[in-house]
Length: 276
Image (tube, rainbow, N blue to C red; front, side, top):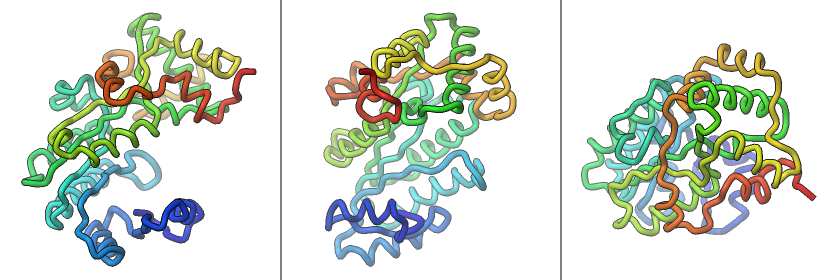
């Protein structure tokens, strides 16, 4: 599903296989998406993968919840057999069911999870709860400011031993595909997703080995300014320091032995320069 089937990205995706069909639409009108999708196939729509934008221009918390809930309700109405929802990890596979956290864009996903659990009926479902995305790290000042805020906050609340979990978005794709390939095994499962758990010093060492330089940081006052000016980001980074993600990485590695560490991602998928 794409908002613009004529975009370069959409065309590039469609060119990968004749079996890929583009459905144009937007999540503010989910019924129209199903109508358009049915034009692309004579088969019933068996599965739906659900992810909503949580921050950005024009995005609201109510809008995210409405889009997520509408996609659930329309999927039930259209006889979808398995529904995979991309949520967020909130402190453990069981703990996340009861932990909204103080972070607003975590709370929206908590509410959509509850709606899915209560309204899915006979439709099967899997909830994937990724931690922080490795893919949000990129060369340049924005990542340096973020990493500075992260470092200082982790040190403030948990000292140098405080860890944070990261996941590569390509590994989220692996577990989504696994849920669709094994719907009975994954039915009614909620799974936190992480590939690495590191102190800030361990993060910096991963950068050093992979790129030849430690994790990029800058002046602390810039990190503090980011925390103050972007309230939602400040809430999230503070939660990393006070609480934090608790995905079960050893369990995940049994399911996917090739789960990427931060160092592996830096070497194979990131835009950062590679060490000689």
